[in-house]
Image 1 (cartoon, helix red, strand yellow):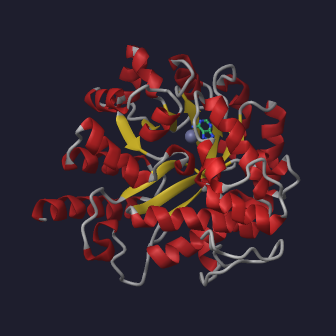
Image 2 (cartoon, helix red, strand yellow; image 1 turned 90 degrees about the vertical axis):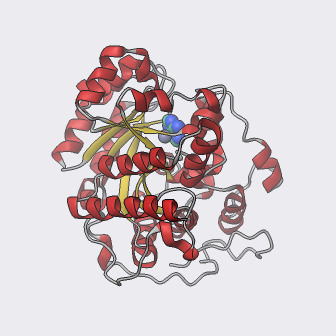
Length: 386
Ligand code: ADE
Ligand code: ZN
């Protein structure tokens, strides 16, 4: 497959035509998304990109919705390719709509924009654009969420989705040494039977997935309904995570732990309202995938300077930093680290701790974790020497 060119001057090809770019293809490396590393001997460390030391550490990103990486330029390029009518006249008009008072306001636009994603090529191009950008910011490992129900509800075949995303991840491993894989998220606002059917529809491709998650509108959709679907996912050998405590109360986090038996909590910032829950998360070293710029843009916090992340670290929580939906929230993973430095005053030691946490919290194998941890340490030393 080839990567799409989203520059505004690119002429749109006929629907379904692959666009410009020369990304090499491969398939043999797609089978086991988490094992192995670059064998080329090339130094892929984000800390040495372009011969300079990045201002933010090499990191793993564990909370990233690939549909949320759909930049306005790509929305329009894919709309041209697939003959989709958009309710926005221009890139600028679409970008101007990126002002959200709540999670739901954001989700309405997020789902509307997915209409342009139709073929494996589209999903490939979407993921590749993200991987290139995040690579430039020091991404070393990604556990990428995708929302199959947002696509199958439009008659897109789930295999098209998985094929395109898997291809892009394979290319990122070859070109950049980025490891990782896919986490399939169930939309919690839809009936649980829909989630169960979605899981069965991909059961034969479980080896192409790392795990399952739970996302979309949170308040009013507590985790309990999904307990049996998560049991089934575990039986398929998949890891399990869930969004909880973003807008929803701490009891949703407790339920995600007790009823879904999640290994990580996505967001989880409202856990701080329950001391017993915090003690439990600390004691069990349950990772929280925190998304600072997302929390600001979705009004979970009114000011980044008041973000609870420093308090979460002080409490001993295993906090990681992630971008959630970077095209919509004004920043990729490195931008989130940068904001923590600029607005909350976190120093290099704290940023390195957060990056090390992201490695610990990942589902990478022990060997890869050791490599990534060493890369973070090398970054810290390079920063000291700079
Ligand atoms: N889907 C995409 N981004 C999300 C978020 N921040 N919370 C819940 N569902 C989402
Ligand atoms: Zn999310």
